[in-house]
Every structure is written in C-alpha cells, then in structure tokens.
Image (cartoon, rainbow, N blue to C red; front, side, top):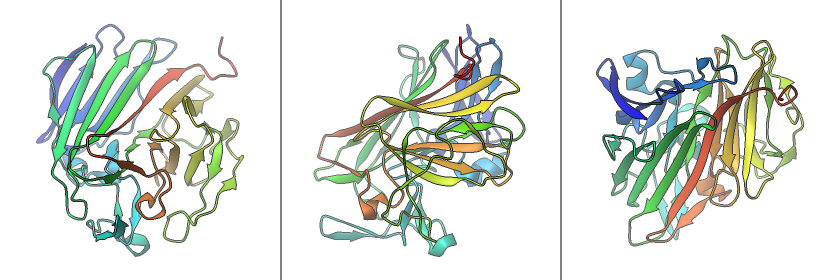
Length: 321
C-alpha cells in the first residue's frame, strides 16, 4: 500500500493505492475526510470507479450534495436546529433552509482532517479531527477515520469518535457516498437489509412510527422510483448489506455495515435528482435522533463510538459460484 498526494484545484487529495489490485480510495482532508473516489476490482479483475465524485473545485468548495461526506457528530437532520441534552438547550447552525429549516449532517464537513502517518500502517490510511466543540455542540471530541483496501475484501472504513470532555455527550455518525455502476440507476436492482421503514413527516424527520416495507426485500428494479427512505435494521449484531446490482454487467456492489447498538443500525437510501447515482448511507442513529433518541449514543468521558462499514464488488448472489 502507498499514499499519494493529488489535488482538485486548490483542494488537496490523499490517495491510498494498492498497486497489486489497482484498488484506490481518495479522500478530501479539508472537507472533513470526505471520501472523494473509490475504485475497486470486480470479480472479473476490472477496476471500476463506483462512487460519484465532486468533479469541480466549485463543487468541493460548496460540498455539493454532501458527496462522500462524514456526517458527524450527527447524521441527517436536527429539526429546527435545536435540541435538549441533560437539561440544557442547544442551537447548532441552521444550515439547511428547506422543510422549515434544520441543522443537517453535523459539523465536520468543512473541518481539516490530519494524516496520522505519511505511510500506511498495516495497510491503513488514518485521518483525524479533534475539536473543543462547535456552535450548538460544545462537546470536545477526537475523531479517527481509518481507510483500508483488500484485494478480496474490498474497501473498509472504521470510524472512532471519542469523548475527550469532562461530561457526557450525544453522538452519531453516518457516511454519505453516492454509488453508480453505469450511467443511470433506473435499470439497476436494489436489495435492502431486513428492517422497518421509518415514515417521515413533511419536514423529513421520523413521525415516530415504523412500517413493514418489502419493496426491496429481494433484488428489485429501482425504475422510476425516487427514494428518500430510512430503514431501521432488524439485525442486532453482525454485518448486513445493501446491494446495487447491474444485470448487464453481472455485477453487484455490496455496502456492508456493522449492525447493532452503537453500530450502524440504520441505512438511508436517496436518489440523486439526476438519477445517475444512489446514496446508500450507513448511520448509527435515525434522522432527528438528537430530539427523538432513536439510536442515539451517549458517551461517558473517555468512551468511544466505534463502527465499521465497507464496499465490495461481487457477482450477484443469484449467479454467484
């Protein structure tokens, strides 16, 4: 493994490469360790770029569509950009005006992550972010994002968020990659892990109910559907996978996530308006978790949230040998 330096305009890029397999993962350190591009070998040995990147410096400057973003210390929305924790009320930045206004996707998107080592350690590239807190989130944290590649196992990302303060703090994490196997996702098949869909209010936060949703229990065409859905996983431990299948290529992209308490117990799927890619977002908590408590992790001083997810290209299961 080796780490290479690149750039997009004035924005630096760190690239972890596996010269043997051709796999690579590139990260934008000044955009909170956002994953920029992911290239993986398929079962046929062909290396494919499977994420939709930000293509211009303007997109990176604006963090357009939050492509590849690390969503911390909360994913998705905090309704009205206000929450209470242990008797105090907090007002994070209202950075999303539609739907009446929310604090969305945490605070680290425009932070600068530091490279822990100039060379990969055990094949892993690690970036770190430390903070004494942000507006409306005054809790000190230390974050580590560890990226690794494996010829057979694909891509793996392990995230650790540690409470470095003297009091308790609420924490969540999500990852916001947009995946594609071809030019459009309409002909692709989607299979979601077992779980309950969380119906949303008109403000795109859970309404407190759960419903059975079998539309993608087995691989099914995405078609004309516009997806913006959150699934609370049934699994309480182990790994579960969301699959995007291209039948023409005879190829399946599998995003796996560790499930269970304190892990990635939720997955969000979102269709990009151009329909050329699909966001598949592992999350440790539900949207608006700082208000509704669904999956919310509360860390004691010195405690950490540690969770892993990853991506692999494989033969579709119906044709796997």
